[in-house]
Length: 283
Image (cartoon, rainbow, N blue to C red):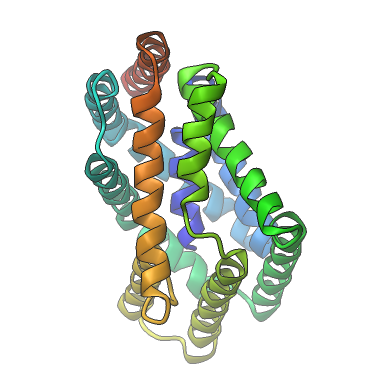
């Protein structure tokens, strides 16, 4: 359930062409994605699609202009030195916007949670197991050096999307900042499983006890909020705190090693997003 809102937000902010594509096919993509997890019954299909349509219309009407304003602020800041504290502030701003989406989607998520059948929860459990196997194959293999290099390559792909090509000296600085982040993929795998098991527990509780709507909505809201803070945070506080702070430092390093030409590239990227948000909001 938490992934629905996060997935939507990621689609909307995945790139200028992806924004247009996401809105042109957003209802279909979101339905397909949700269906892959729960396998909708024939009775559920029509009202789930209607809920998604209503949600997308609300989002277009009420959120896109705010995104354009926020991206304009980022566009102005990307031309200047960036601090890790500012990056953390951007994370908080992103979380705030995602939670607005969550609050709007909560009634629809509540409807879905209350209507799930036992076999659909089993389907969800199997989907989680498949995802975990894919995660194991991708992230739980190789030496420490292999894993650091794999992670660094993902960072560079994103950095190059924003800023264009980097020279070797810049890449070395980014690599150092990337490697400085804590690396414990086994812990992240365990965190994923905790999150999944908690959602399955909640859904089975709803299915068995049939609590009132308000109680179901409260359970889902609490689950989503905990997903942002990490389910095993109490036991692994130092790791998660260091992960966030070092990731913010890495993003600041990427921004600050960029040349004027690379910053201009980032400004143009952001402008394309801003233009698309405004165009879509005006339709």
